[in-house]
Image (cartoon, rainbow, N blue to C red; front, top):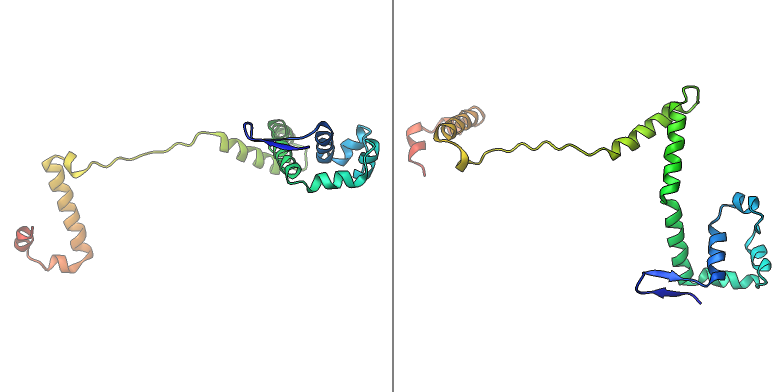
Amino acid sequence: MAHFDEDTGKVELTDEKRDFLDWHVMPAFLRVEEGLPKTQLAWAESRGLHYNTVSKWKRDPLWQRALEAKLAELNVGGDRLQAIIDNLYEIAIDRDHKNVVQASTLYLQYVEKLKPTRVIVEQQKGTVELSDEALAAELAAEVTHLRGRDTSVSSVPSQELRSVK
C-alpha cells in the first residue's frame, strides 16, 4: 500500500509498485535493450499479477504523485542536462556537422545564462548632499530647461519667482 510520508514529503510505495513505476518511466527502447516486458500487460503477467491490478495502481492519486515526482527527477536531473550540454558542445566544435550553427548558438546561450550579470548603479546625490554652488547650478539648469519647454514659466517675471515659497 502506498502512503505519503509527512516528514519527507514523499510518497512511499511498495517494492512492487516502485518496480512498476521505474518500468513505466523507462523509454521503450531501453525496455527492449534490457529484456524487460514491452507492455503493461506483459509486465503484470511477468509478476503474476492481473492486468487490472497495475491499472488500479495508475489511478491511485498517491501513485500518480510518485509518478510526477519521478518524471520531474528524470527530466531535470543533472546527469541528463549535462549530457545534453556535452552533446551540444561536441556538435558546436565539429565544423563539418550540419547543425554546427544551431548547436553553437544554443551552447553560447546556455553559457551566457551562467555568467553573473553586471549591474551598473548610478547614484545621484540628493539635494541635501549638494554644495550650495552645485545646488544653485542644478536649479539654474532646471529653470533654463523649463523655460525652454514651457512658455508660461518664462512669462513670469523672475522677481515673482523669488517671492513664491
